[in-house]
Image (tube, rainbow, N blue to C red; front, top):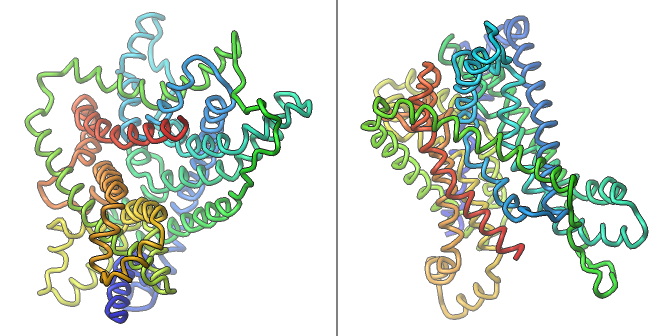
Length: 539
């Protein structure tokens, strides 16, 4: 029985590692591709590679500064201070998580472009001719969009760190006579630094994986270069090399994030504060209250309210010409793929978590660790890593029809989804398992329960809520996923994300608003559930 279990674990590891292994294999000698690798890399180094590196790093620097400033300032405002509306901002600042970054990009472009309502009104009001507002389709504009779409990662982690540890330490510092500025700079911010670093790492992984924003804005990052090399130039070796370099950046970020997480170790004592010296947020009045409102309202306005309003404008203006008849088909394809991938991902996560609980040996821990890395692998890397071995199998055994099964059916797409999103389900299921005491397993074994009985009759009733949360999270992630869906989707099975991207790319921004708003409505579900959970914890 253990051998059979290990066999399935090894098979699962191979499926997860195939994208990475195939990328590394493209550099090796064989069928002539490995010999070309050096020449292609030198050619890219002399032409496009410096631009990809500089643009990607510059975009990461801008997003890093943006999410730190916005995320940390909002977390400090709602945690350390008390003002009217604080309870509302605590959960409302998470709403930009429901907005796919490429949807925000389409909304701002439609409003700020030369023919958009803002510039048209300014020209009429001022009498000026030509462009009266800077062009948003550049690296700075992409950083602006990604900052307000991704700052909740930093906000959520920093808010948790400040709420759990900073309040009582700041109260102790106040009793010792420290000023407010000194308490914030020398007590609160150093405590939040590891959480901020972890949030920045998550935001940067999303930035490196982004395709919709950079492609639509014409920003030449690694992700855009991968698709250009594969689809435009038909050069799979160049695409594999760019994907490998991008994967290297992601691995570096994972290492930095893991290092920051190891530092999240604090003593949760009350520090012997006198009775009655409860740590309460500092009340704000007057100008300080207005400043707190501005700090919290600006990210919410820029990241959620304004993009939604911008998308409603073309809906109202072109209500009769919108593709309402096709919306149902697009939504049906998205929901079908989302439900299929979510059910499979949750099933695999349950089996992995159960195997780790029953037999926590080195192999099981390694497989679970690899599954946890999948979410960090960009969709572009997964696509190239899957299509490379498919091309080799198709060239070697044409009668096998490997290309048909991967590209003309949903098999390849669901495979890519599982590589990326099993990690999301696994995190939720493992969180549920952490609340189940091991003594229940011992009692079930003493009563003669086998492995299947233990999972179905003991663990599953206790894991049902965690599994449903995992199902919902994977479903929403699949609905919003763009890079892998764009390349691997079967013929005549467009999804909401693909249609929104294609319509926006063709400058049909009014029509793109309809599928974009549908994605936002779907994304609101887990965000509202997360907000409700956080309110219960704080209450």
